[in-house]
Length: 345
Ligand SMILES: NC(=O)c1ccc[n+]([C@@H]2O[C@H](COP(=O)([O-])OP(=O)(O)OC[C@H]3O[C@@H](n4cnc5c(N)ncnc54)[C@H](O)[C@@H]3O)[C@@H](O)[C@H]2O)c1
Image (cartoon, rainbow, N blue to C red; front, side, top):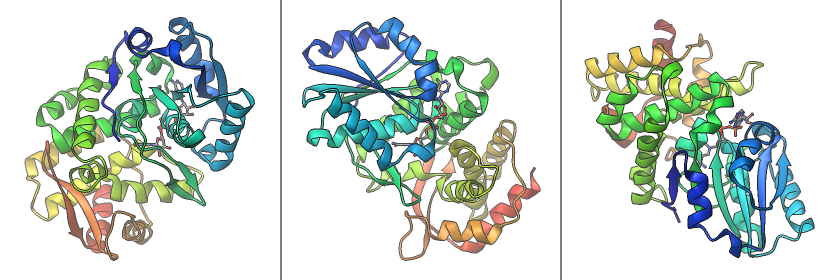
């Protein structure tokens, strides 16, 4: 289900043309959104000289819907895509999720590949074979597990990505380090986001995600550790989505990591020194808002789809590089973790 053909670096376009027999496809389609059409397609075109048909959709999570899928399928049909066509998804996680989903069910599945253009999609969304769209206000509720023929990561695309989107993606890189690799954490914590070539860090971060999803493709065990930071993080994200001031997914994950490290420290599985180091680093990058809706956020944690029988089950860390999953957490401890976030602003 999960494909390991992830290429990273400046040569990905050459790799793509040389390794994958593109001439054998009857036609090639490139899916973009309004921003990646403007900022990323020109770069793509300078390296990729074969004929293709562009399908462009509106940018933004609110368009990750079945209605947009219908538009993509219509474009494929109207332009005579057949079983032997290839769909290239050029964009962030929204484009790679919806494009991969559309390809995985069009004519019972056509080949697709991913060119992620945000840090979040490079390090997370385009690795692991999960595709999907949102439906009836449920995120990613309709989807498939389906592997691209290749994922091609080129950091050149990041040059036009706004700074808040870079920080958002970086939260997932921090998470990968904290759950799986102390060495990677040592590198990550030295990073100055304004002055770092992210490619080297991306190589390691992607390798961690790949290793985890290869060992546990259907999230029966180890893959659950990737949910670290996401129980409280998702709840915070959902609360902010209802306001006029939504925060990005990775920004919410960073707050979730802070809250869940507090919880791990409270239940005496994470040492004070490690805890303080993590807090100091994250605080230097992310803004912590003031929380007043503790109950609402805690209730959202209770409704988390990863729970069992109404018991909150969390993935936590015992030390940088060492995660455990399925830890039962009381609602009261979530509230305490939010009080903690308010206290360290
Ligand atoms: N499949 C998975 O395993 C997985 C994992 C994590 C997240 N996701 C999904 O990923 C999505 C979030 O991904 P995202 O953060 O990349 O959001 P996104 O795709 O919405 O991109 C964020 C914004 O950046 C713009 N953009 C993209 N690349 C750009 C570039 N190079 N320069 C300038 N602007 C650019 C986009 O048009 C958009 O406005 C969510 O839908 C989430 O559910 C999926």
